[in-house]
Image (tube, rainbow, N blue to C red; front, side):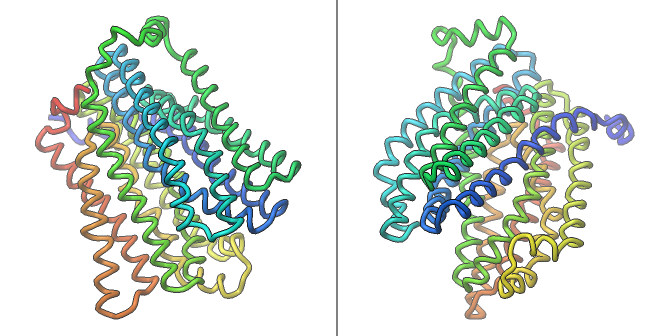
Length: 457
């Protein structure tokens, strides 16, 4: 039996940091480019184009959120195969994921011609805004194959414990998007269409770069395996991929529903609350990008550890990722609390909105520290392939705790409050961490981490 001293001595903090910091930088670059997009349209276009991009982005974000399971599933399957000493299997997982990405992209591209007009009838007001939003989304959707392909390749790299190549891909896409945005929107005055073309071109370049980096990353034997698509047993092995991805898709949809509900419910309370919650959500997302770095590290390290069937190394890797993540979460909370006035002033100078944001700011400020367990355990459960538990825990947290804790008091009182809404969202994040923590303990006691279904993808 492993002693506590053996478990905590010489933890692989260096390895966890080496995996985490590139993903933190890559993640933080995403909202910065979004701010530039908004600034370009805000300064060199008009409110019609800005509104069109906002409406189109909601639809695209939903699609990308849901389909992100391709990255998560690939990371887990590849990492566990490497840990189990089956490197050739990683190429088979890559090929199946690429095939699935192609089928999904083709399906979405066909459906969007019918679905987009219907969605925009709900998301955007009739007239020029709706027309521009539809055109913007159609342009962007033509880069969906590139986005999904990049998801898969990025997942392969992270599963192989390489996060520097995903950093290079993300920074290239975001910087190119920024440069093209300035040229198309600021220089040529193309408005929403220019923003869409800038992003689409950047995403296809990102896929090309991902393919080059992947080819240079693979050794000769793996390259030879990747060249051959026939006779590699690709007709088998779909069950593990599809089952895991289905679980992750449901989990992601539930999380997206929770975030969308917060926005929609805030809008029903008052326009000021809707605007204030949008600002507070940006604060929350900023912290999540930082915390996701160590979640990705936990994902990669736990996948390899479970592949080697070494539970001691699994727990050591998880501790190595958890301890610095807690420090980072505490630092975010401290900065948010101490810098409240500065953060709010950065986001708005409207007196009424400033006051409303300040009234509810404490909820967002403390959320990083409250949510850190959920982020880390998400990474661990993804890496170890325990997707069904993740799905079930998210279902209980959203349907059993988050929605009832807001709707029942609002029904009893006859009105909803924003404090009640943020309390429910906080309980959601606590519940996710607690439920996954209980599951972690149960799997550890029962030896369920090494179940055949999950240890041998």
